[in-house]
Each structure stands twice: as C-alpha cells, then as structure tokens.
Amino acid sequence: MTLLSCLIVDDEPLSQDVLEKFVEDAPMLQLKGICSDALEALDFLRSKTVDLIFLDINMPKLSGINFVKTLENPPLIIFTTAYAEYAVEGFELDAVDYLLKPIAFDRFLKAVNKAIELQQAWEIIEKNKSETAKGKPDYLMIKSDKRIYKINIEELFYVQSYGDYVKIHTKEKVIIASETLKNMEEHLKTHCIRIHKSYLVNRKAIKYVEGNQVNIHDMMLPIGQKYRDDFFKAFNEKI
Image 1 (tube, rainbow, N blue to C red):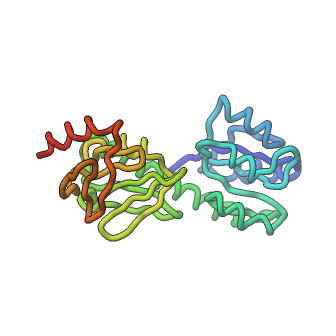
Image 2 (image 1 turned 90 degrees about the vertical axis):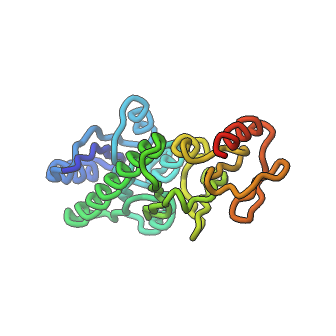
C-alpha cells in the first residue's frame, strides 16, 4: 500500500482537528505536521518534505493559492476551504482536489485516493526518466494536463523550450509539459542532441544539416553557436 506523508495547513483550530482525525483514520496517510498559516508552512518545508498538503485557501498574511505559487517543486495539494469561488483558481495550479468545508470523510477519502493515484504515476514517470537517461527503454513517460503520455522515442522529433514549460513535438501531436529543457536533455541524453538554447532534437529524426540549421520533419531548426561544436561532433559520430 502506498503511504503518503502529509501536512495540514489551516488557520482554524476546528478545521485542524477535523483533518487530523481524518488523517488518523486513513491508513494510507502519515501526518508529519500541522501549521496555522502559510508562513509557518514555508518554514516547515525548509527542513522537511511531504508528499501531500491539505491546504486552506483563505488565510491571513499569505493565501493558500499564493503559498503554492512560491513553491518551486510543490508536493501534491488538496485545497480545503469554505469558499467555493476559489475552486477554479485552485485547479489552475494543478491541485489534486478541492474539498469544501464542512468536509465529509467519504469525500476526504476520495480526494486522498486521487492523490495516491497521482503519486504512483509520478513514481512511474521518474523511474522511466532514469531508465531513459541510461538508454534502456524506447519510450518516455510525460505528465501533461493531468494526463500521462507514453511517447515512443522513434516518434519524438524535437523538444522546444516554452517559458516554464517545454513543447514536445512528436509524429502525432505536440505535448506541452511542465519541464525544463535542461531536465529533458538529461533524461534523453542517449537519444537526443542539444542544438540551441531552445531546442533539443532526436538524433534519428535529423534528415540533413544545411549551414547552421538542421532539418527535422521538414522543419529547419537553428544551431546555436554555443552548441555548434558539440553538435557536429555528436552528429558525425551518428553517421
């Protein structure tokens, strides 16, 4: 059974007590702490990690939503609040679920089960990334828009930097994922070559090189000066 460590962040003592009792009654959860506001939670997370946070939204000093925005790599989040109007913004932050107070135990368990499913999916993705970097599997697992995509490496054309995201261009579609190009380069280093600050290309998808550009699926992509020497060395080894 998957066991999730969790943190309760809520400024209302009664809500803290209810959630604490729910966590105690859920064998798949392990309570690591209770914080009365977001600033206290930030301090907690500086020295400890958790898999899941039960997070109130309407709190003094720093709201739950703004608190999540401060986290570089937030854990799973289940929002808890008495204000239904916050639901849309909460889900825009990829929250697992949104529990409206007063919370029923069966609804609480439903949200926790969703968190467990996501945690298991993340573990599969991370394992796949590690194996892909070692050159083992011929596919890549990517989380995008609450879905998990299995991308065959032979169908991958190139990866493009897109702000805080990347666009993964494949034979059938373009997938936008919350990843950095640097991380993608590390995960795909046995399959792909970095050609530019904004582009990572599949070695096998390169049709030809012309000047300072490569042709990938009839798209001409630039070769950055910084990456030129390493690219041509890798490209010559390929052929």
